[in-house]
Image: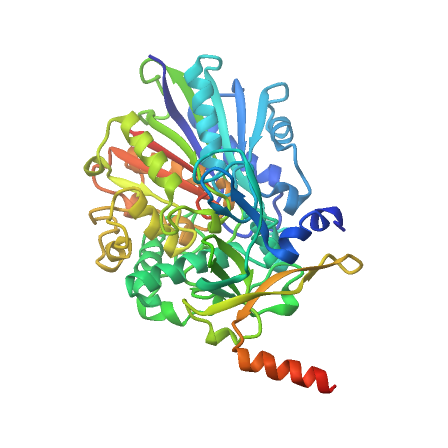
Amino acid sequence: MQVSRHWRLQQQRYALVGQVCADCEEKIFPPRGVCPNCAKETSTAFEFSGRGKVYSFSTVYTAPAGFEGSAPYTIGLVQLEEGPLVTAQLTDIDNDHVEIGLDVEMVTRKLLQDGDRGVLVYGYKFRPVVPVWETELEDELYALA
Amino acid sequence: MTNVYITGIGQTPVGEHWRTSLRELAWQAIEPALVEANLHYPDALYVGNMLSGAISGQEHTGALIADYCGFRGVEATTIKAGQASGGVALRQAYLALKSGEIKTAVVVGVEKMTDRAGGELVSAVASGLDADYEAAQGLTLASAAGLLLQRYMFENGLELRDMAGFSVNAHANARNNPNAMFRNQLKAEKFPAAAMVASPVNMFDTAPDADGAAALVLVAADTPPETENGFKPIQITGSAVSTDSVALHDRKEFLTFEAVRRSTEKAMEQANVKHADIDLFELHDSFTVFAALALESAGFAEMGKGWQLAANGDLGIDGAVPICTLGGAKARGNPCGATGIYQALEAVQQLRHTAGGSQVEGAATALIQCVGGTGASVATHVLQA
């Protein structure tokens, strides 16, 4: 069971917190020690918007330990609107409806359970961007309930 | 000037060795290499291995294998660089021999895969990816290759069947390799119909995980050493290792294997050879898209056109750029960290002209290259007769 390994990534997993290079303004995710663009060390925290487009994708049929119950699931490379690519599962969409260029947004979902008695690990996945009228309808339904 | 020569080779057949452990596999490869080279005790042992900890619960394999093989007391170390472990181990041995600190070395690539199965094995192999930002999302090596292949097909307007030539060629070449795992022939029209592993990567696109070990005896000398085995020593004339981001999402150019480009340039410059001088290229075809990207990044094809060499049949034994001449990872089998040494051994067979029905006529210069992860570690060597 690993607790601190996942806990220490909560800023990244829950809020897509990366960095912006103080020198060349490169947006960086995941965070790293040295800017990949200008090789300077300085950088400040930067929260990404969570919106992007599918750059590539693959549907996993032969799954690793801890993910067998989810297979087949689709992993995307999402190009965030600020630039970087992120590796993340796509959710709320049928596997055969995914295509390159699809508009997606970040949501927080369960990623895996760390063994039978381990922690539940939550983090980012991406779903197709929901049209505004649909979210408004959702809000109304919640208000009624 | 000190040169480095290969004077002995040994291997186990690649496959499912249920009765044989990690250390026994290593010895089965080392013993015939020692006999060929007429050596009993090297100055140093280098072990290339990726997964002994995750699969066999055994680390510290330098000392373990040294002791099992009768080298107790020898300097020994294990090199871990994902699926490139074998090639990076060869590089470390080469550097030590070049330095003059040692005169003889044994390099063994060994991988015991079949002591884990299913999701556990998939997870072990995925440990060569970025654990926090790739594997934690459920990414596997095959699905990482799927991300590359999906984008490669998208940008070049391809369908899955356009990649079939790589696997068909590998199986055709393995027919003549008694140590290969799959010597059956693959029909191109069957290729797109295979079961999916991680779309668009299917069973016929991916190399099979397997047990295996291969070993080399290396000797440092100013001139080719005398041998008693009747074979001319094979010289390592170029040697380079390069790295790239472990995670695919951190690449500068998504469809370029930058570490392939850099290490190939360095190794070929060191050996003073041009592309036209290369008689065969043992590249790391864990997936068809890896083969296409390796051909492009190494300069054998224009970017986006590596697949055409396979489709046009240019990669066969008699083709312009023979690759995977004894089956490659696809048909010889894929014992991850041992691959680099299998490639070196197969290149030696080609340069000795003992490759049987898969012999590249007049082979004198071979390029070998193994790729760890999705291109994060790449070891490239030039071998010459």
